Image (cartoon, rainbow over all chains, first blue to last red; front, side, top):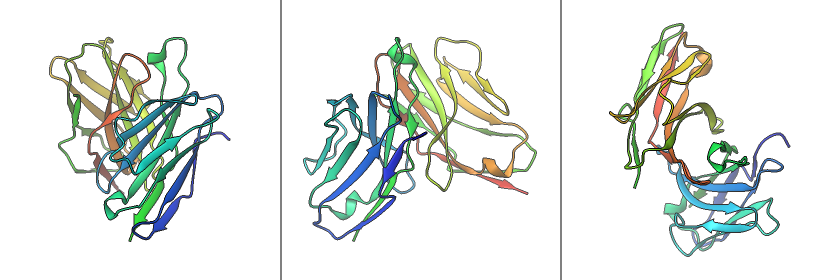
Length: 117
Length: 115
């Protein structure tokens, strides 16, 4: 597709349920980022992939959060045993570094709004 | 750690007028990128403008321009000839120069455009 896509757009989960959020990056983009955006806040970094390698997961708030990108394209963010504080919009962004990796721009998907009841 | 501060939670502007959104940041690095992103109700984060810290010239993109004051660590966005479609949340963001690193965002400014 032309842009980053995410699914589902909306997800309602009962506390304690597991959820999986999907991100399809722009074709050819090797870098993929996940961000969490709480209501009324700016996005906060969760984790970063370069191809299939997860190079930075320092932003994941707990071990209930897990992300993967097994074939270097589609990525899934999984949250186990969801809690109310996990309610947020989860944004995915992709980029394609040029020869100079500093010149990339991150392109964002529309996000998944997760509500935990 | 780098931080980004947007001190104006909400702003409003009359259609066709000019508005300036403020942003300050804190970093000990000398080379970095700064960005303004727009997030309409659809939630899609759209890049408005970017500035490389080593460039003294302020970036411009059509009706959007920035006032980058490196010594003061200030990066404001000016929107000229405001249009109804400019209404959105605007986020200022910082990114380190080295490598493919994550963005650090401010809390955003909600801009309303009055017809």
